[in-house]
Amino acid sequence: MRIADASVWINLIATERAHVILRATPVPLRITDVALAELERGRSKGRRAADEMAALLHMGLTEVVPLAAEDEALFVSLVSGSAAETLDDGEAATLACAHRLGVSALIDERKATLIAARRFGTLEVLSTVDLLLSPEVRDACGPDFGDALFGALTGARMRVPDHHADEIVRVVGAERAISCRSLPARVRRAGV
Image 1 (cartoon, one colour):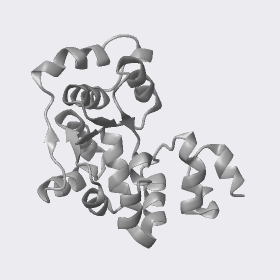
Image 2 (image 1 turned 180 degrees about the vertical axis):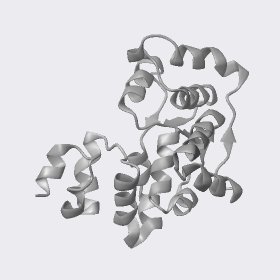
Image 3 (image 1 turned 120 degrees about the horizontal axis):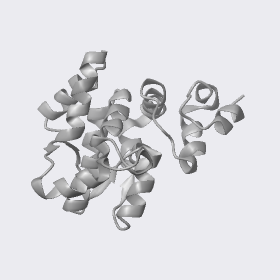
Image 4 (image 1 turned 180 degrees about the horizontal axis):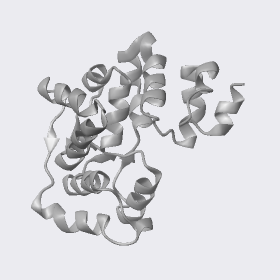
């Protein structure tokens, strides 16, 4: 099992192939109840991720992992303190649950990734891009793979770690990469 933060789910939903991706992924992907609540709050702003997430849950393609009582102290330590050292509730819950269960966490935010590396040296933290670039997902999406990535980049502004940027541009194409504001400027300019 892997536990993904709300931003990862938003990215997967923006691919318009989340159901294909979840079926292809050999390690089940889960969401915490706290991150799910973040998606629910997006409804009032007209965001559709909660509706799509509800469908994925209904299809049995994912499950909700509750923040357990034994996660509370760690959770509080991740959300309390200076702004430079704290996370939002969904990121904190994702890391706390993943740590307790000894599973990988999927988080895209750079700050959360850095805090996780400092606080949990052995916890594997992956990004949406790590998941999407896996051979299983590429194969499952087939010729639509570039469109799936482009959807996440433009529909959700998926963050792309620098070490994956060139591969993402290769897959979506240099022309389309220019319009992807979440890609580093150096790779967008290279497409010109």
